[in-house]
Length: 622
Image 1 (cartoon, helix red, strand yellow):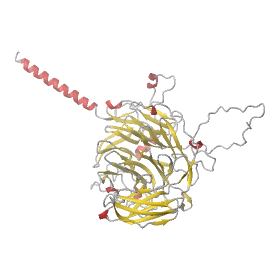
Image 2 (cartoon, rainbow, N blue to C red; image 1 turned 90 degrees about the horizontal axis):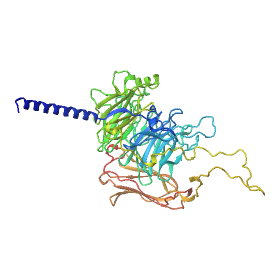
Image 3 (cartoon, one colour; image 1 turned 90 degrees about the vertical axis):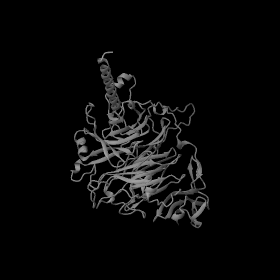
Image 4 (tube, rainbow, N blue to C red; image 1 turned 45 degrees about the vertical axis):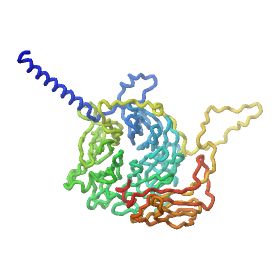
């Protein structure tokens, strides 16, 4: 070996090592998740080849009300459609592509609630066909569709202009397949200055029926999200709201809580000590919280109301609940220098940003936020939707990073409109929709195509929605022809196929439940008040136990049919682990016509209460 050979070998080794490091760095960059515009194609037409279909121009889907995922390769979105090209309906993602799933049950601003891997609910628009009235009947977002096994198995609606008419719904969530909730506007006034019943409109699916379960506080429900074993509701506060006895005028609750308890839920108004409001800022100066959650945390983002009456202006506020504690990463008091990253003092209001969407990213202590501004919105309006899509990552401490304006430079696509909805089914895997109906996907190049979900429940096209009570039966103007069969005549055979519907099935007379409409709250932190409705005269006793020991109770009382309330004083040193309402009917229960059996006796276990915890202190709830 010559003297030059070791030097050449060393140089070659260094070059190879440097090349390997460069290739490794390039590979690492390639595996970094990034936002890219998703190509969504119309449904493949009969006779159209796959190659022809793939060569078609991507299309927007219209206003997307909601986008939700059961798994990274099992997603849904609901849209109002685009003119005649994209009908209102539901689309599904199978890990490879988005395709049209249903041409029914679309919505102006609908919602989706997963009840199982092959089962979900939608808040959908009603169908035209109601009787003429001096006003057009409201149809936007005031009906429900129940999807299961690749079809719509139930449709729920009501006639308009009645005391029991369904109101527009803005929130939906399921704890399980047999426990789903839908919330919306405040209940309307029945007569000037009065309400048919106080509260916000709310529906509950208990596995067999959909029933009205109004929330007993007059705050419209705008969002709903499950976290742990509870459902949290974000509510809209207004200056004219009537507050319950447990709600403070200076800090009414921005959150409600539904705690499922057997078949009788308990509703609780939360005052967790957040958000913190600035000087002169009233609670109604912030909008309702947009909620998101993963296994680790519940997040809420609140935007300031434009020019609130008799109040100073608020600022963008972000809340986070994790490990049993509430925090406020962004908002008043979080930065002594007043450095809110979205609402900046002295900056023109049209340039201040607001949070249009928020999504917790699983496996991380962070969330993605979609952003917009008045400037961004006006640009979209003036340029037929052509405005940038703004997105950023937010840490649990309030740090904003990875701020981007989409589409990214060099992607070769035009502006697709302000950010609207966002969801993250897994770490490094998020989806964002724009106001114009376009989708962006945040993922690595390798994860942009996942193993295809070939579930048959999502493979066909659903075009049928069952009848519901939203459309009254048609009464013919003339009697039907006599087909009794005169001599020499044969009755005409109908060409229509008779479809058996649930309403046509045989019905049973079953007893109504003895107990209904249970609502519990703590007064002054230690007095439990339980309100309930009795179907008939009964003996009733409220009992609080710590394990097996009775630590507080009321005397047994005889109460008539109707709505009642019982109160019991609790001892923080002997905080109960179980509270039960013991009842015994003294008369036969009234019956109703239904296909489902009903419980005839009730012993309701209300909840296990953490030691020393007030229901009004959400930060300590388990």
